[in-house]
Length: 430
Ligand code: SF4
Image (cartoon, rainbow, N blue to C red; front, side):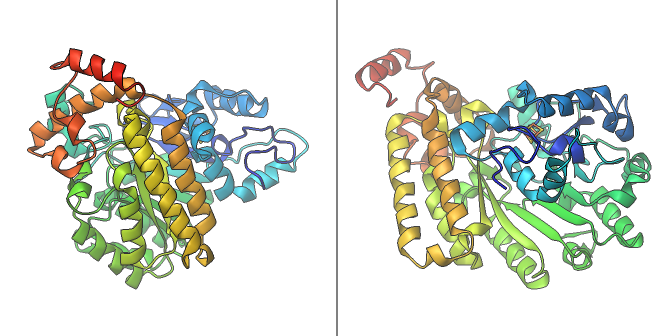
């Protein structure tokens, strides 16, 4: 299946998720996926089943069948245009069984009675406060959020459901039909609801459900319950371990991160659950692209994984953290460094390794995304937020990002004329 092309009778740009997936945000918002901007309903005024059968979702499905791109899906189309990747393309590939079945039908595909997949965010509970995150996705962000004036509620922890029984009651018979559950957060491995749901699935004999995670892998147990002991009982487990840089830079970009703890938990996962599919999820932003090569090499060396285990994804929001905001000199330096990495991959034992081709495509996509747009007008915003968080967290990003240090020491507010002059003298570079 070529996921950029028409599949059977399905139009170009088709996305399978509105037919099979339900995304539940910590705010209670219900939508087809986590990239969709907006909601089709909210738990405050709708049940999951009502949302599944709602007119709002029917309209979204209709738009896809008529080949009408939705504004709410702009994140997917933006990444496809510049990076050649998106959640839409990945989901069409992942759920290819559904899409081929639908592509072969004569009439408009009908959604199943209940979602085949859930993307669950029980809460924003998290022990990290990554620089590009916010209070809506991390309880740990609450105090910094208050300091910069951006919070989602007047308390640190925000829950979508009262408890796991509330969720199970709403899913009802759907629990018998579900094929795939994706857990994110917050940090799902810290959430009691997540463990309770796994216990419930085991009790129902539903260990055939595929479990997927986006986890910071900083913990491997909850109240004495090892996550590995639970995962051993499920046939299909997929863990995307989030990591954005090694060492001190990793801890600055993702505050709370510790490489040694992460490495110990990954090695433990590899040992205890060899059946689990492990990938390393790297969100590529202005904060870590300069060190991306170092990170990719460290992952491959330390965890003895093939290049295919590294999943790269260009950060889109907030815009001022995008790689596209970087000065031209830094972009050129990064492009050269990543091209050298690709050359080494092609020359070394790498090409024969699993997933090398797809990995090389992702790295090229990351370079293309960065060079695809000039958002240097947002660089000043990036500098201001970096300085603000440095002060709040008592950190020094200049020491950890020497390539950006000349820009991080001053701001347009303080030196507006200097910046204007530099832009005049070095067009496209500052
Ligand atoms: S196209 Fe993208 S944003 Fe839209 S529903 Fe599909 S995955 Fe979600």
